[in-house]
Image (cartoon, rainbow, N blue to C red):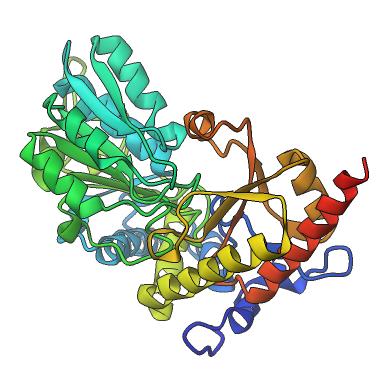
Length: 415
């Protein structure tokens, strides 16, 4: 790893091979980390190391490279547990992403525990992955799905939350950090109130784990999910954490190899947790890569990561409105309760046009509804542009964004 001060994004860029490329003669300003993060060299080397040197299946072969693969895979599970503050690595279920983790809970826990007229509470700022599985479950079980609204400043309306808690929901589920507006929700307080109302709580940590310290014991939630590809890890990696006693009581998600203890023609007994939820051959290389990514983030220090992004947000919230006259920025107005996400619209330019023109300047931003169509309906926007930051984002990237948006404004003002 490059030697850095806490936290020097320009020095850190040396750890990411993509910054060695030129795009139209310029270094890439990558402002789409909320969609997926770039990958440092230590991650790609860890993945290649498995594929090149000990590419065997896990939990099966008793020969040397099989044992090496199993050890590396289980080491990644232990690293995940430590990174999110889980007390036992056996509470970590390896999945492909947060979406799979949420679906696992919906299919396994949900179909066993949600009944007719039961209530599930979520919010209007959720990613589709934390809405659609619950819609399907509610339709199947004839249950009620209710939504906490958010206010003009992009924060969840806590009065709305309290009203819905009076319905005594079976499950409450919400994002720790909104991918649509960057809102950082008061997770521990919301979990406490949900428990007082008798609900279990699932927290979507896809945008939290990469960007701030997380401790599931302190949050006191019952389920917690995240994706590895947003945390400097490879696609196909992620985790579900749940309390051991809850996992023990849940039926398997999928059937097949690895998740069994004994199979007979007429019945099967299942493996211990977490393995009863991990049918078939997993994406071993991705898990090993995620372990390397979490080592990298741990070396940086998640307090430093959060401090760096908060400073960038404060800078962007100051600079962009000053320079870009027609910009409308959605979400919280302060970096104190906002992650490294700036979602915006220009008065006269469609977000897709904005993103296309920024790409000509070697600036990568997201355009669309960001898998948050209900959120955009509440904002009164069909789509938006989104710039999202990470450890390799610098002030220069934000300055380049501002200057490029000025050009976009001028172009559309002439039409």
